[in-house]
Image 1 (cartoon, rainbow, N blue to C red):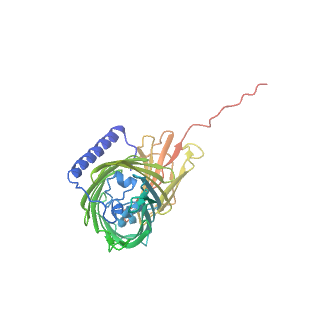
Image 2 (cartoon, one colour):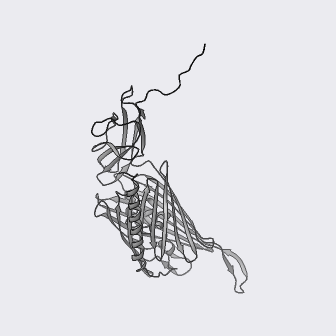
Image 3 (tube, rainbow, N blue to C red):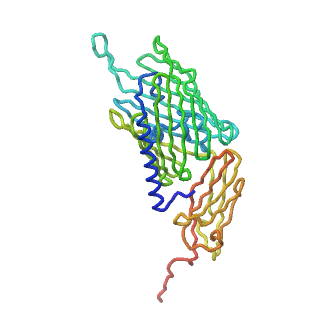
Length: 422
């Protein structure tokens, strides 16, 4: 997969992605309905993260990060590394909403995750019968999701959440337990269907005397990748007992290996956002949406480590095909979730054009040697070349290692010769 494209192709990709996004917004906007608020668990049903907001909340068929269990717990089986995720958003009148999620992938056992979401309101004034001030109070709600997911086949995965919620208002508090069920199915490598059933059997909370039950909710959607996985569009329909039907849609395009742009439509409002990847598998997400009270901003931070990964390292990193160090050795490592199906090590020039590929079936060897020649056996010019290891397992999971650089030089030693004057 090549990320750096020539300018003509890059402009075409941007225009196509924006056209798809605008067409999607118009189609969904025409069908959106006004939603009823104030039903039990509405804050949790309408929760969005920074990335998911940029996609318009259409995440049931994507759900490829730990926080995705809020939409579809089956997506947890599609993470390949341990991942920690933080989210925060400041709404209106002192209200804030925060999220924490942690996912652990597994090979033979289900993948597991823990998600904690919280909503804290600003202060409300407490008064007596004479409307005299008695101080203030606030409302707080929390949800704990314990998740598990397993691939039953290369195309089909199932997942479930055990959901524990707690609500506090003044001196009253209550807790309840429910469950979520989800599935993901790949029609093709690029086309995926997702569905989930939320709030099965509850939660049920009784703050005073009246019991409140979270309404049963169904979510279904489809996502499609394009541009070799660098872009995707997603659509989703939600149906809740009481509030009714809502539609969501969004598009995402990685315009650079480190930068993604998003455009979507959530309920009745346009949304957007971006992501930026930092070294050491750190990612920053940002999302915003329009609201009748103003613009809402959401920020997310995620960190990946360990788990299943691929890596490569060239030793030496500088060599000369006509010198003493005439070859470089690529040390290769890969750990996949399922049995490794195939691997490839691609070497690109400064224009990101492929000059040499090593590949094979099964897992990669411990190392491969490169003599600085291209696929046809011709010597390559001096310069810096990038390389990257990619592996794929029998469940269709693809892993990419970090890009490294190696330099070819046929020039002699550089420096100055000292001149001694007698």
